[in-house]
Each structure stands twice: as C-alpha cells, then as structure tokens.
Length: 141
Image (cartoon, rainbow, N blue to C red):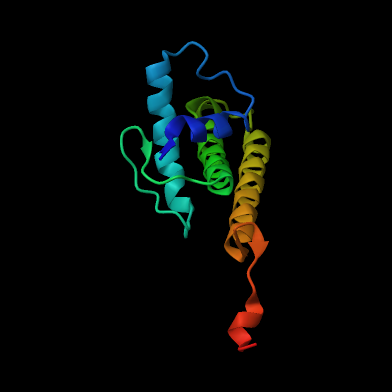
C-alpha cells in the first residue's frame, strides 16, 4: 500500500508555494486529494493498478509512478493557478490592461511541465524495472 502522503510530499517538493500555509492540515489534504484525483487520468498505462481507498493506493507504487503522478499533480495545480479569477478578472474590467502576456507565460509554463510529465511517462513505458525493454525478443532471437 502507498499512502497518499508519499505522493503529496513528492508534489509539494516540486512547487514553491505557501498556498496551504494557513490551512488546517485536514483541509490541505482534501485539496491535495482533489488535485491528485484530477491528475490520475493523465497517467495512461501504469504498470501498477491505481486502485484507491480513503488512506491511499491499495498497491505499492514505485518511485517512478510516484514522480509521474506528482508531475501531473503539478500540471493540475498550475492550471488552477492560471485560471484564477485574479488572472482572468482584468480581461473583463480594464480596457487598457492586458494580462495576455502573463497568462501566455503561465500557459507556456504549464505546457512545459505537462511535456516533462509526458516525457517521464514515455521513459517509464520503455523500461521494465529500470532497464530498457529487450526488443530482440520480439524478433524471435
């Protein structure tokens, strides 16, 4: 079994944010769980079933699965940060203020992080237990 906190710790290590600083720990964990649940569908073909309980994953996740989930959690968190009302509101209020540059940079950051997560996932699919897949087996050698 892998406790959710292991995934949360990997996610929190990837960001420099004090968003949850003044929150009760139970409320922060509920929020992290929502981010995790939004991230899980992005992990297309995990080798370990991602069956969950209220406490964590029923199977033991390896370090690579944990890091891939943490990367996708960061993507979901960045998306939430970009789409905050504080970033969107000026579009509707001030004619001479254009947050397009800020939103463009934030979107590029999210796209970059998503590409990084996909690259990690791609490498994960090509290896078995940390070693490259032996494709010669497919050729009948």
